[in-house]
Amino acid sequence: MISNLPTVDDWISELEKQYTVINVVNCDVYSPNSIDLFNRIKASYREEFNQDERIILTITNDYHKDQHPVMMLQSIQTMLNEIDISNSFVCIVSTDPDIDSNYDWVIKNISTDPIPVYLYKASGEYTNSISTYTAYQKFSGLGNNSDIVDQMSDHEKHLLLESKTFCILPWISQYTTPNNEVNPCCRFLGSLGDAGTHSLEEIWNNSKTRQLRLDMLEEKPIDDCNVCYIKEQGYKDDTVFRASYNRNFIKHFKKVTNTNSDGSLDQFELNQLNYKPNNLCNLQCRMCRSEFSSSLQQVERAIGKTVIGGALTQSNPSLLEQYTKHIDHLQQIIFEGGEPLMMKETYDFVELLDKHKRHDIQLQYITNMTHTGLGKRNALDLWRNFTDVIVYASLDAEHDRGLYLRPGPYKWNKIVDFRRQMIEQRPDIFFCIHSTMTLLNALHMPDFHKSWVEQGLVKPENWIVNTLGQPQYLKVTTAPDYLKDQIREKYRKHIEWLRPIDPYGKSTSGYISILHALDVNEQFDSELFWKEIELRDRYHNANLLDSFPELVDLPQ
Image 1 (tube, rainbow, N blue to C red):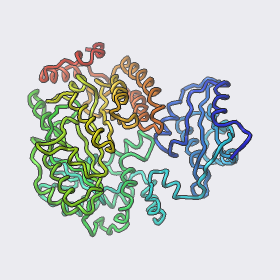
Image 2: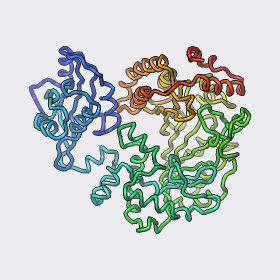
Image 3: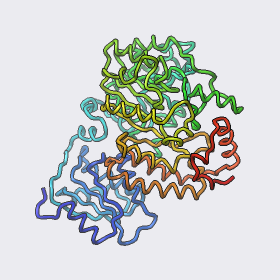
Image 4: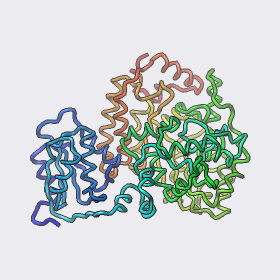
């Protein structure tokens, strides 16, 4: 502990008197190299700083990795390099008694700026985990699995923690689409086999699956995995999708080690399932694709559009029987649709798990929240014995705006009632909003988020904003410049409100990413936009400007 020195808070107060402080970041609440920390620092970026402007970063604990000192300090400098923030505008306040010597190593080995940051020693406790690779693994998200990593070879550690292409899912998972295509996950762009003509076990070791594993082991970029690559590149982080699966299923990594030379595995054992029995859905979401919604297919046919996938409301009856063989090995099941809470098959599966007393399996649902049960079967009753239930709610706006974006036979208050029942009966359920950002609802997303937080319906940090990729005419990146400016202003204010109640930046980072996405310039096609809007408005007996009057200035 350093004594007879100002505290961290004292230093902040003093620096605020001397400079115009743009941002104060408590680095202790972030993991080194995390997307949340990167985005928090990046939010302070200016093309040109005034001479009196400063960013303050505080550190009271850190880690060592192998022979290299203080991982957080390294991480900060790396981020400053990448974001292109000059060290001369950064102040680091730390209780580290060796901050000078530790930063001397960083400036010599990592910094691209010859000018060092400003260092301020503070009094107070300092925690430093020295020479512990295990500690590094824990803050990297490996948790109690760090002991497993300690026993791995260097190559295995590389694949798990550092590779930009390796994914464990081809060794542990299968995902079957409503049209019987089998893939390792829902984001895989190709197809490994047809569950309508072959068993899941046959597909497990067919030529395509074996080659996929071999390519993964050789760290070859795989075109069918581009969704993950693009996402990771955009977030400047390796904790989304692919890499998160590597960490979550680390205890199964021995399967990778035991892969045969031809890419086959001796045992057919599933640890994760994406279960999408069919595309049965009650909503006709404007941003969805017809292959994922039986109701939307009706709309697309009625307005003269090409329907993808056919009427996929019939399930493959053999799948559940095949999955039953893996009940003892399953760790996680993701139920998707369509709408999984209106599918008989999802209830049958959970009841089967209940019968086998596999209450430890993590159940994940991606749901529109309009169904609380099916017949006499209630979802909350069904989940009663399960210890790990996650609900991702696909909601994009409140009240009439929500109904406009996701037309269908429901009332908004039913969604709110379901959420309140969940809070009352199962407060331990992890609940998170998955919102789809479009040109239509971009301005209102912050209002929706704030409203649900203030009503106690969702935690501030449990809000994920996904930017729409298709259809093109609804992408927020096509918004005219005047609308983008309005969105930017709204989001900056929302971020200011959110940051104090989102200490790890989980939700904040999504909004910051939207701000970056707005820098992409795509042409707004007024003719296409209004043609598509009017087609669907006529079918739904709706009017865009009744729900979103602020869009009246969109070019026509």
